[in-house]
Structures are given as structure tokens and as C-alpha cells.
Image 1 (cartoon, rainbow, N blue to C red):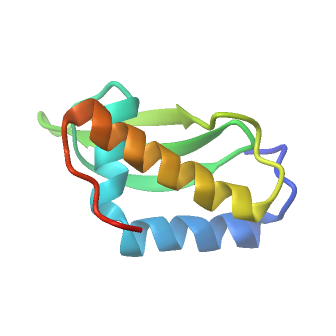
Image 2: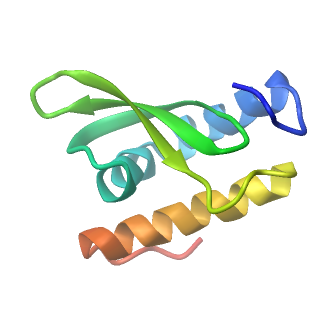
Length: 101
């Protein structure tokens, strides 16, 4: 993963946060925006263009899912805004009421 304006320690912090605090959101984003029927998903990283997940499908198969950002990431703050956007768009696509962030 490349093209980010910050180093691997920041990517590790983001993925730890997503997997620790937003595990259900990862799967929801994969279902709503990634085109897969994920039962669970782990955020494995990101690059300037997309958030990357390893999704587990209903049949147990695993698949890498890249969900594009609306524009290339230029700073760490933008990642949070993009993830909130992804979550809200995935909820809308799936007919799920989003919780407040």
C-alpha cells in the first residue's frame, strides 16, 4: 500500500481502531459498497485510493475487498471523514439506520 502522506505506524493505528471499535461496520461497508455478502470483515490496510478489507463470506470463503475513497487521501483527518461517509453510504444502500458518530 502506498501513496499515503503518513507512515505504516498510522496505517496500523487506523486498522487497529477499525478492527477494535468498528468490526461490524467493516462488514457492513463490504456488503453495502464492496459488492460481497460479508458475514465479517477485517480492515487489513489502506492506500491513497481505497480502504482494504479481508471479508469472510457466508460460505466461509475469504475475499479481499477494496472500497474506494471519494478522492485520494491527503491527510490522516481525511481518512476518518471518508470512513464515516462509507459507513453512511453503506447503511443507505442496505436500508440500515445509521447510528450517530
